Length: 227
Image (tube, rainbow, N blue to C red; front, top):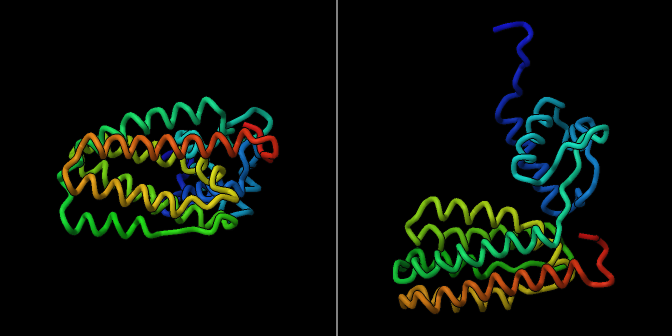
């Protein structure tokens, strides 16, 4: 190895930095538009600059941060266009996944999906809301996997990751858990009965309701964050 070759940080430290920074961004403790230097991030997380640098590069690929000359790194903004593009794709792909998954739900999968529906959250607690959204993602990814197309499931998983920060902002001060649980139960029933068209319609309605909630929260006159 050349003495000039940069030493890569251990993968475990980079993975830890990615997970920690992603959590900070998704909970909006690192707010959209906030500047973030490698030194400040290293101090914040108690890690060295090498894993932080590698982690920021990976998060840039996910669209969560971007490099800005003379400012270091900046947490990516959430724009109205972003919201529409992400939820448009979710509505198309998740609706199709639900249609294909209908009739493929076995008893154990049905119980697993139903258990995920029961997870609630406290609107004033961002960590609680994020835990609820983690469970919600597991529910939606499980349905996508039942559709039998691995690439479709992976694309839906990425879209759900991208929409998580939007939903955290949209859920702030709002409790939609009971409504979402009711939607999930209706969807599970349609899937179990093999009613593909109904499952597709319910799924698309869920995604549309989430989009409307996010847009209402972020465009309200009292919203603390511009998009």
